[in-house]
View 1 (cartoon, chains in turn brown, orange):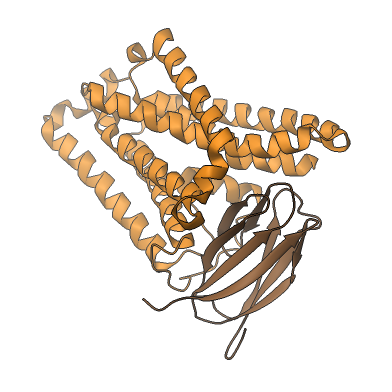
View 2 (spheres, helix red, strand yellow):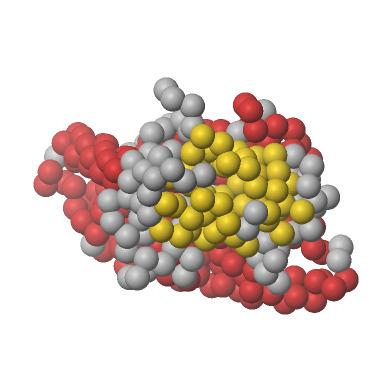
Length: 95
Length: 265
C-alpha cells in the first residue's frame, strides 16, 4: 500500500494553524494534528465525517479522502468559535 | 457553550438512551431484575472511571489510534450481541446466558465510552467559572431532550411497532446497520479500510450537523455523503439481519408466528 501523503495542522491557543490546508483531489492523505494547548480538544468535521480526541501536548492522526474538489470545514468541538479551519481539495499538484 | 453542551448531549448521551430503549424491548423483563441493573450500573461506573483516567494512555496505543480501535471493538460487540437477540424480536425464543451476558457487557462498554468522552468535555469546562452557568443550563436542556426522546422512542417501540410485524423487522435491521456504518467510518478514519469517493451528497436534504442529521445517524446510521464501503456494509448488514430473521421464522411453524409474536409481548 502506498504511503499516504502527510499534512500537519497545529492547535495553539484554541486556533488551528494553518487554518486552510490544500490537499490533492481523489487522493487519500494523512492529517496529523498537533495539540499544543494544555487542554483537550476534539477535531470534528461533518464534511469529512471525522472526529478525533486531541490530548494536550500530543498529536493525533486521521486519514481523509479521496475527496472531490471542494472545501471541507472542520472545527474544534470544545472551542468551535476560535478553532475552525478548511481543507481545500484542489485538482492537481496541490499541497 | 450552551448550544455546544446541548449538541454534545445529543451526540454522546442520546445514542446511549436509544440503545437502552431498544435493548429493553428485546430482553425479557424477568431477566432485568434489580440485581442485574445494579451489577450493570456498577460495571458501567467502573468502566467510566477506568476510561476517564486512562483514556490518554489508551489514545496513545496502536500509533495513536487506541481510542478508535477500542471504539470499533465495542461497536462490533454491540452489533453482534444485538444480532444474537434478533430471534427474540419475532418469536418467544429462550435467551441463553452467553447472549445476555455479552449484550450486558457490550451495552456497558458502549455506555462507558460515550459517557467518558462526554465527561472529558463536561469536567474541562465545569471548573471554569465563566462557562459554568452555560454548562449547567445546557445540561438541563440536554438531559431533557435525551430523556423525553428516549421515553417517546420507547413508547413507539413497545406500543406501535409491536403491532406491525414487518415494520418492526425493518426498523431493527436499519438500527443494527447503523452500528456497521459507525464501524466503517472509524476504520476508514484510522486507515484500516479503503475509502472510495462519496456515492451521493444529500446534505441539502438532511445535513449531518442538523438535529435531524444527529437523530437519523443514531437511529438509522444516516450519513449525508456515504462512500461505497458504507453502502456495501449497510446492505450486507441488512442481508445478515434478514437471514437471521428468516431462519428464526423457518424454525417455528409459520402458522404459529403471529401467535408467537403476540405471546412475546
